Image (cartoon, rainbow, N blue to C red; front, top):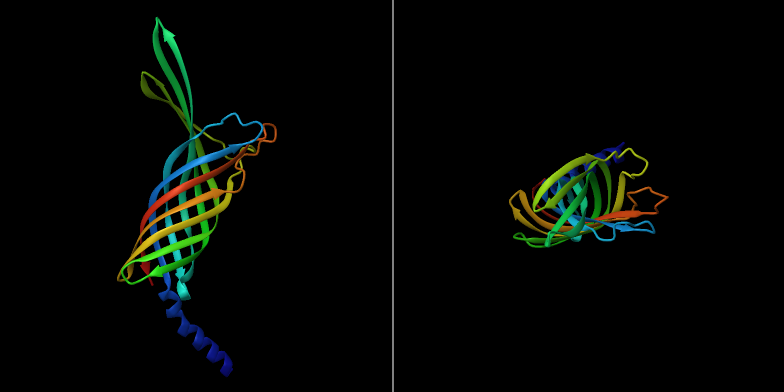
Length: 225
């Protein structure tokens, strides 16, 4: 019984220490993404980047010697652009026309990273690396045309329940940033790179593999318990 009371007292005494190392906050910023497309049936050799958004809740636990764990929950839009151009002549005059397709996917993402921080009470540098898992909530394809002027062609929903899509994206992520302490608050400035390892398409006939990657920038504010 005495040992039980000692254990309970020790555990309760450690709670303030645990919470004193915990940070919770939010961050938001642009996400510059693209899609790596490979395979024998790859009909899209060149893709261009798409600028979306990444926003969410960030959780960080700082342990001893600057080591810690970082996680959270984020909403991220990821996609790419494909442009087809054609030129022709009318009565000796040169004209050009183009069509741009922009597939966009909306993900909910949860990362889990090891974190290392170094610095002082005025500014700290932070480095994190680990893995993430994301689930595609929705997707659509936006289309635009150009012939003398730009105009919208329409937006078409993607059926993510179709067998051609894999809604899970699992990959690696690395993050670096600066923390500016302000009493109980922290201002965050960071950048991260993530690369998917899973194939988002399931197309055995055309043999296409699609893996997303993105460069993210974020600014945020967190509270230190």
